[in-house]
Length: 637
Image (cartoon, rainbow, N blue to C red; front, side, top):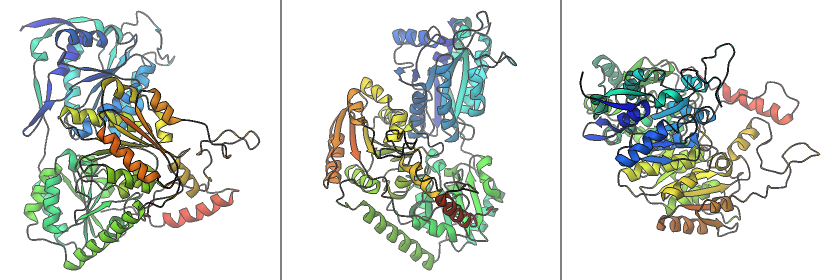
């Protein structure tokens, strides 16, 4: 037997994680560069003690970061992972019961977004020597079930260390999934509180540096040949570029490919940044929240080339975006699950970077027709003009969200990162934000989790700082999402991490309010108003006396309040510039008119309307819904 060290399970796990490295070509970085944790009776003596011990003995080996909410610390890990193109993420440790349960939403977010996050929720006694313990979930029909079992359907990997000897195989299996481009997402290792503190003789080799090389699979010859034939035969090909392009580091290959072929590109939310906004082939977002330019050409395309997209309902406009009766789908994806979406008969299961290289070689000499090229340029020019008009100051006392986006855009630097997740902002940003850097657009829209923005933005900034990058992170958030989860502003202040938060005060849920109108529910329950006892609803005119600027100020941020008036947009531009010039986190508060919308992109989202109703508004909405539904198709490619 080789050399061993006597350690607790927690000590061994923490030190093991500190020695894991992701290798992607010439890039080598720590897979788990740090750990966030909130301690309770489930982990204070285990993971908490292990982190303290390392902090004393080797403080740089596994840095600890304090968090204010368990869900938020996983959001930070996801934001970090996105900025590092899935090569690195944080571990998040929580205590038994509610601490663990608080991470469930974030686990679902990580898995849905195909972004790695390592979750270490604590569990009750494996020995059951104390049973039930405080915060233990009891199910009479299966006493072995605990809160951590809820992570099973939300995780790409789940296991529970019930004996110390299981640590080795579980930790290695978890790392395999965490660093697999196909399998990655939430990786959960449940740690019973007694097992965490048990000791074992750990082989030194388990604690040594280990490299995990990212797989970049090449396209198979047959699949590539069939895809090339389809593209060569296309008159109006169209590319849908998703997050896989960025995670593969394939944006340069994509740019070269579209410049050689002239094929236009529409992006999913995750694909924002694959081309600069002003690139001739970039028509902007596609689908339900897409641009009119992208959606018009997508509707007529005879070959759709999906690259690194999972084809969500927003990307396909609930299967109404692609209307050519003979449309064919070439789906390039590292995961067969996504490559076969919509019945594609032309899946190309490969890394985006490698597939684009192969396609470029095989399609040498191919280019779209001059007529199609002119159409692309015309549609792009028309949409760019529409965005310019939407950004133009109206002089209204309460500006609309498009104006606000335009002001923030004009005051930001090309490399700055905009962060968003939920409400009406993702749709407006998808249409309007002019991305000027591959990593400059971070909109979490797979789970679209209200409350992600501030925590995710903090993770984005951590990711940048880890690379020595001091560009600014601008978090844009509505009051509804802000109220869901804002306490990580305290974390930013505690660690001196600078982010700029632009709070758009809508006095309610702007996005769902608009959606409520389209389904005939008349914005019911979407305004923040004082309760009307006579009408028994919150639809009255008394706006709540909530001061979110004061809330942010109480956390220790610099706060700039934009007063309503004709100069609001100019004042906002000055405020953003002031925030950028500062070395502290800045919170900018501006009131808006939520009834002013972005230009229409002709996208649709399938939200069923009540089949029968006594409300005229719902009846009219049902008629409109049935009309739109007629455009849906199975999209069998």
